[in-house]
Amino acid sequence: MKLGVLQFFSWPGRHGRLEDVYARALERIEIMDRGGFDAVWLAEHHFTTFSVCPSVHMLGVLAAARTRRLRIGTAVSLAALYHPLRLAEEVALLDMLSGGRVSWGAGRGFARAEFAAFGVPPEESADRFREAVEIVLKAWTGDRLTFQGRHFSFDNVEVLPKPLQQPHPPVWMAATSEGAIDWAASRGFSILMDPHASLRELGDKRRRYTAKLAEAGFSDQGRDVPMARLLALASTRAEAAEVARRGAQWLVDAYAGPQHAHRKSMQMARTYDGKDPAQHYVDSVILHGTPDSVVEQIAALQEEIGLNYLMCAPLSRETFRLLADQVAPRL
Image 1 (cartoon, rainbow, N blue to C red):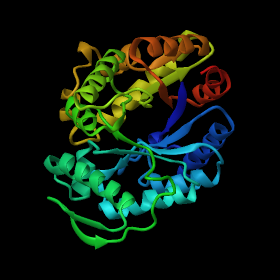
Image 2: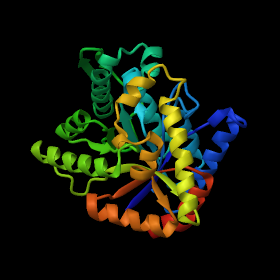
Image 3: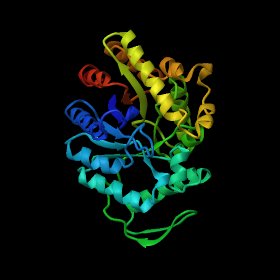
Image 4: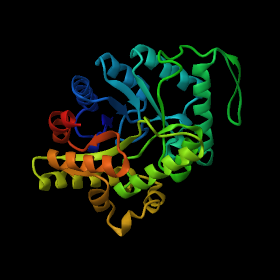
């Protein structure tokens, strides 16, 4: 079982200094490096206090400088929002400066505010994302890049540096929808699985991915499939449930609160099993309990859906402490 942390840079209510948010995150990353963690996965978001990290590549350089063995993951580089040559250069540079420790996760994104501000029509975002991924991989593996696409065209461009890892860093595609899972599987890409799916949905998506890989002539044997899970730990189950409830409400408000013009479309995109959205997260999405009970839950997921790489998103400082001290050594 590999263990990583999905690191957000949340600034709830704008309380405290923003620089302290980064300082605490970097302290966590140093603890991960000394402990049994495989990677930190840095979450990219724009124009929101939900996570104030507009450049996972810039933050990744600082994380690499503060660590020695921890892999630096992007979860994700929002590829549809980048010029693909700049994206190829930045990730390759991060891989070079980190000593070949990059795990590259790429995604399309979902926030209409991000698409609008960066001038990306939402209806083009999936196509731009897939074209950008193709360009990045070609830029990393060829001496010179010639490409003719719908959105980008290049002729005989030498993209430098090349990644230190050859032929390129390990690559994952964020895949939430069935269409995204099917596309990634058809290309033989490994996937990152999202933190918002219920445990039942997670199993269904994992099985679909395996089936679609086989249809395309690929296998999932030996393939790391990080599954992101929100996590709440405490000394008692009741305390952990309360942490989970607070985290769930914060999450729902951050993604679909009244500050978002697109909140109705986001709320309608999920049914939440007919429950209040925050309660749905507590009941069906968040792993919560004492360290012992959560280890048991993780073992069950290993058996039931083939979980082999857990990407935790801790919902409190105490959760991270217990994760590092009592859960990580047992996985």
